[in-house]
Length: 121
Image 1 (tube, one colour):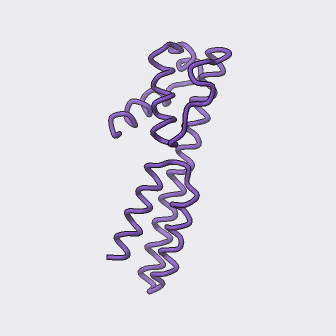
Image 2 (cartoon, helix red, strand yellow):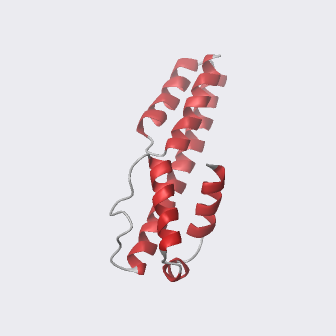
């Protein structure tokens, strides 16, 4: 999974124009694989896109959503740690549980679950 994330971040880190210029079977496959493994769902519209520009927009939207959830995870972990340090372990666990249960990104939800298990040990 780490290799997939690294490839995705490298690809999605380009401008809209650069992504559109790389609109091919390989880039569509990367999008579909990342979408499926990251969100546990099948790629919307599969490999059919109206245009390279539409594809580039979807890539950038997905990357933006991933970044937002990553920040949210970081904030949740910090908040939970502050609560735990303050002796409010159950409240800390609830923060992590809510994140885990609402986050669409499998690997971020898994991190929250690991943090939750670490608090239970």
